[in-house]
Length: 172
Image (cartoon, rainbow, N blue to C red; front, top):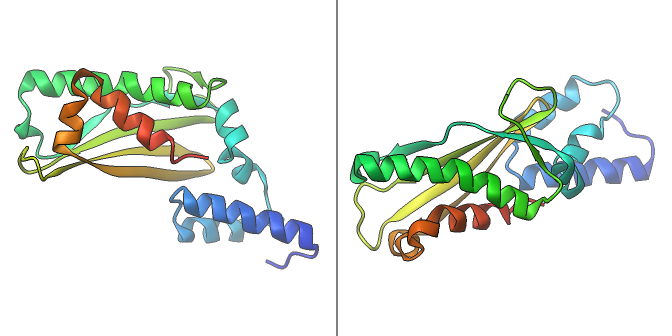
């Protein structure tokens, strides 16, 4: 793809930088660019702060990966419920103009899938990995971070709020 104007080239470069920072694979970017005759700025505007502020989201069913057996059945149920509720809360604190729906089939909806990877054992030096998978027809992104077992337990009933607030800060 050959871009004639320096302004358009700069816009495309910044758009690619934002998408790469959000974790979008370079292969997906190249494929999207190859499939279009002219550069599209709609994908980059979606992943901008303004785009995420005005977006409509759906929180998909959360999941536990790794060793969920390290948690009791009651803890698993409580954690899964908190993940779904608290991810939505974290997004609304970061983007007050965001809208949430319950149907993932809507046009233009960004799907959010919260995932918590439970360590092999709940020893103080082990880590949970929390991630949010964002999916839209224009692309995908993943935000993730590791949190120490003691750090998570220190927040007790507010742990999911804490985890997702930290993750959502990584978005533009």
